[in-house]
Image 1 (cartoon, helix red, strand yellow):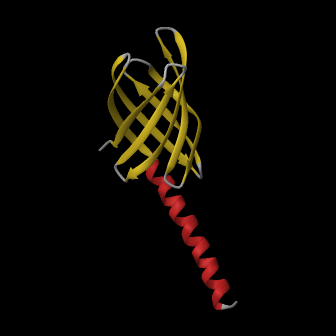
Image 2 (tube, one colour):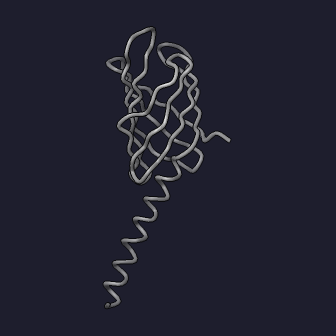
Image 3 (cartoon, one colour):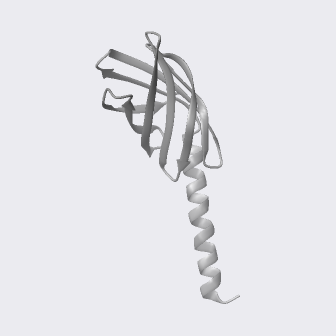
Length: 125
């Protein structure tokens, strides 16, 4: 194998390894407290990562606990859906965000047709 091919193969492996490490960094428990139109919300997210698939739960003080759906992690980017209930009404909350550091997730959540909110989740200790 030539040096160029070897260097290219090693670069590809390194890129995949970095993406895998970032995906694994999202796994675990995260907490967030933020203001919304409905008042202060306190959330706990439990993320499970297998490859690029994200599952787990989202538990809010106003919405209760919901399973995470349509979750994916690619590099430092994360996206998932929380299918919650608020006052007996089904509510789809779509999240996108980035892993800002090993201890901080910056998320934007689109709450049905009501608008978007930004929040920061911190890794729980």
